[in-house]
Every structure is written in structure tokens, then in C-alpha cells.
Length: 310
Image (cartoon, rainbow, N blue to C red; front, side, top):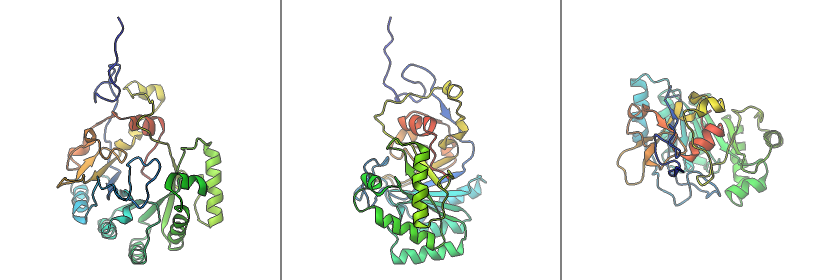
């Protein structure tokens, strides 16, 4: 008698074939992410979080949304050293400089994911002052989807290349630590990609090593409709993958959903809207294990080896 499979990625405990779904334990909270809001100055072709000038599904965070988590880290003696900020475009949030200042004053290093296109003069002055006051504590990760203008603008839109280049050059000339995030969506060989970025960095006199995976991180593509396998408990051994290397073993993300009065802690940066990955209001509540019940868990993290942390 033929057994009919259930839909994939529906049951948090069992796969469509009835096998035990893999979960990931939070081993240590290395990086706490904050999504500062989903508004962005760009509407990219394949934005995993659908950021745009009109998307306010995640509203702008305030200092008062961020500081309780910084205090909880200290009070609970968590091992967190790095605070990450993503969006949308974080620097569209009018309180971003204040949020950075508060985070740095609490003693954390910060990693900001940015398209480097929104550094207006007043913001530049604030950022330079913070970088001077907290040396080697701020890293700006710039999104350069491809080392060629044509393919970068295919993803991010016409006219997005030059402002990004100017923003990156300003950051480098101003003494900020920077690294770059690229994409593998065009199916190129990784060595060829890194060679292309190496030439770009050299042409711009940007002191980055394209062969260093921290200086240049290349992200696999994400497509919820793509046919990807579910991850069972047996997959770790079959694939030779350590669950402790998954992003949700060492990070969480704080968001504020539109209409909510309080922030929520999500399992990871990729799953901002899916309520099955809403783990609670505090870091203590969010320390629970995460079932890998989404296509992104399989394609980006387990099979793609992706991670948003430095």
C-alpha cells in the first residue's frame, strides 16, 4: 500500500516522510541581531526580507527597544560580544546613530549590514565621532552583490552602483573597518568570483583581501519555492555537517512587527515574519531549540553553509 506524503515544512517535529526533523540547540549567543526596520531605499530583485521604501512590516526600532536586551546580556552573563544590525537599510532609521552609540557604550562590538548609499553629512559626522571614540569596534558590511556594475544593478536597480562605491570609499578613507557581502546567484565558480572582487578592491584602493572569508562573504541564494530537501536528524552524519555551526546555534534576531507593542526575538535573521520562529520576548525565552522547519534552513544554512555573522 502506497503511503501518501504530507506537505513539506509543515510539521515542526516530523518531515513529510514522517522522519524526525532536525533541531538546533543554542550553544552560545555569540551574535545578537537587531532588524532596525524593513524600509529600504532600494527594491532589490531577490531580497529575502522583501525590503523596499514601502515595506514597514518591521517598524523602526528605538533605543528603548534595544537597550533592555543589552542589559539582559550583561545581567545573565551571556557570552555575546557582537551586536549586528540589519534591515532594510539600517541608516534609514532616524535613530540609528543613537542606537549605535548606546550599543558601543555598553561595551559591544557592532556589525552593520548596509548598502552604503545613505551617509548624509550629519550622519557622517556622528559616525566618525563614534569610530574615534570606540576604535576597532565598528564594522560596516557593504552589500556588493557582484563585482561588475551590470550584475550588481541587475539585482539592486539602475543607478545603485556609483553611490555604493562612493559610500564604500568614504568609509575606507574615514578609517572604518569594512567588509563586503556578495552573492552567488549567477552560478559562477567561487574562485572566479573572488578574483573579480580582488580586482575591484585593487582598482578602488580598498584594503580588503577577497580571499579572506571574513572580508568577503559570499551568500547562497534563497528561494522559498525551490525544491530543497528537509533536514532530518540523520542528515548531520550523512552530510558531515555539525549542527553547532548553524546560525541559530549562536545567534538570534530582535524585531518589532508592525502593530505589536513589544519586540520579539526570532530564531535567525532570515525568518523575520514566520511566527513559528518567534521564540518570545526575552533572550531567556529565546534560548529554546529551533526546529529546521523552513526551506531557508535547508538551502541557506545546512546545504549552503551560509551565516550572517562575522
